Image (tube, rainbow, N blue to C red; front, side, top):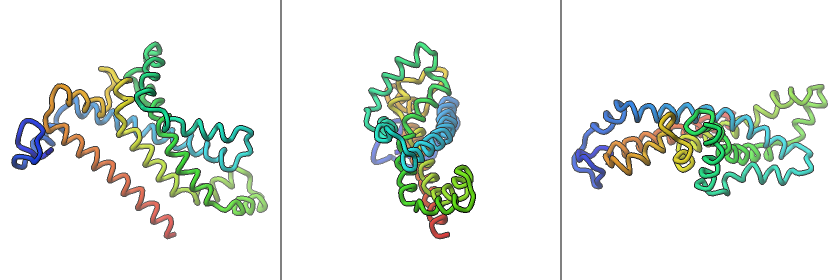
Length: 232
């Protein structure tokens, strides 16, 4: 549909043209929304991967009295409907003037992405033999050295996969963005919602195709890195 020659979304497409992709890449509003989403997704990936990995270490290797509660809290955002989460964030962010801001999006998307990191990294840690860490301790390494020299190299494929999931959870998110966006900061998901309401042209299909292409490229890169690490 993104290649259709008609001025509205139609399937099957009538003719083939790259006009709508040119319109997408030349439109300053679409580009601003796309780059805003990319920046948010990259920052979310960094924050969620670090926080999620630390939470996974606490859950799997830590001796915490409320480990089950911590695990439930980390995966809680996957259970709560996004529309409920979005309304709650709007009520909190609006008085703090965080709606439409980089920080507001970063907080919201990090919370949404952490569960994917925790689940993925936790699975990697559970497959790692604890005797390897004990061997490091017996050789004189402290906890920090053991993590960076033994644990991290072994769970790196899991962390890489978790980072990909975190990026996609942020970049493809639209429901929460609908509530916390404004004219100053708008994600590509919110932009697509607006064009569906007011300007239903094949540019939306072109933007969707770009989103799918980016998602597939990231998933493919993550799979390639994981395969190479596993083969080594």
